Image 1 (tube, rainbow, N blue to C red):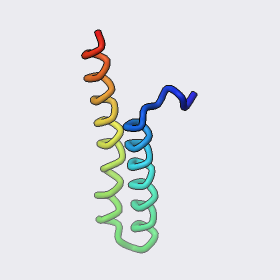
Image 2 (cartoon, one colour):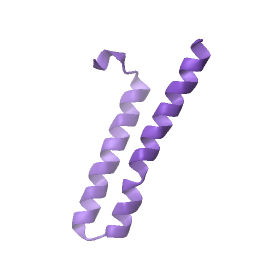
Image 3 (cartoon, helix red, strand yellow):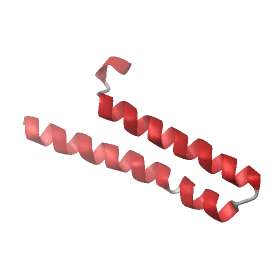
Length: 61
């Protein structure tokens, strides 16, 4: 399953996961506003990955 992922896909997935973990760390540390800001990066990073995938697929057609 993971053989279909490119290096860029893996990097973006790791970046989104680290953003989520860091957001939870900030939240439990008591910095709710900073945690919310970091948590909003997760869907943005994943959406950027989808965008790159769509651009790549349209070039191959």
